[in-house]
Image 1 (cartoon, rainbow over the protein chains, first blue to last red):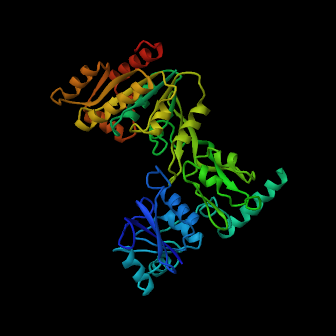
Image 2 (image 1 turned 90 degrees about the horizontal axis):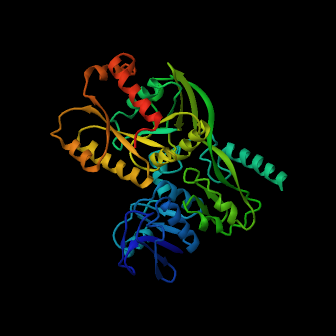
Image 3 (image 1 turned 180 degrees about the vertical axis):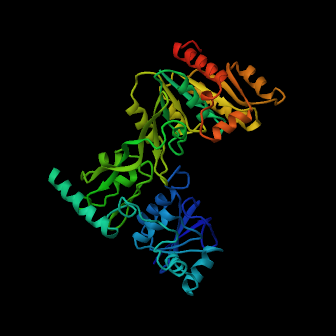
Length: 159
Length: 278
């Protein structure tokens, strides 16, 4: 599977970086072939939305798993919605990280969130707002779906 | 005519000056542009009444027309859109409502819908009409609310705009189109430093200014030497007065209780409206 690791340096001895959105680069490893490549993080100097931009980069590269230190709210939102498994609290080198993944020693962020706050689906509260859930994307919760079908119906009428 | 009351450092007395200045002149409109924490209405206007909701257009994707090509995410300067393998996510609070995504979308699948970020309110007290903006708690962008407040206030008459503290985007938006800026400062090192940032900003924006020293007391001449060096005109010095502070704490504009200051502010108002400063 394709694993992405925020890191600095080349190859398996590269060190894992703690932050996600503004890390210096991502090391991609295909755990089947053990082939790797370093992709510089285009999001690192963005003034805002760096987590989202970094996550978008991983989606575009086809990542399936992320081994990270900490991942911010928005980045986690994008990654989890893209069905990418995100592991947190990863430290050491890329090689160490892959070994821990292999031996099942890592915890996904979703698992940690569920353990600490069973009612939460994401690490920190997103809250509910009267504009219908988080108002991001479509189909999130009851209000989202109703709002979506109403808006799409309106849209089709215009067309 | 638009006179902005700004400061640089927060807490120097913008609200005090703006409110008392507005009360001193006939027919002035007071606009509280510190939409993140407006407080002018505590002195003039109270709760007031709602004028309108302030909204920002936010991008929405028609999932039936969308082909997940990713052009919108690539075009967005604010990283407010992510295109995932099966759907598109829009991050409302990052979306600046610029509309670029809807323009680049090859399928015309992106439209905009209004999203509330705050509101405008109006009230009056004494001889003053005022309007203020309130940014909803949790919203990151104050500037669009300020812009709308100024739009609704229009271009006519004598307007006094109380700016937010600092020298960032919301302050720049408040200063846009200003004829004059009254900078309120205090004789402290922080006050002086932040004043210098505000002075630099006004120079960039080419807005003439004058200084009011509030809570004036002996600082060994440090503030005065900076003002002299910059060639800045001192319009008024308000002393570090317990009586003024007491009235403020009770929500009473001090010109209402202290005739000498009523006269001073009236004088300043007249000079400003005649355009006889700078």
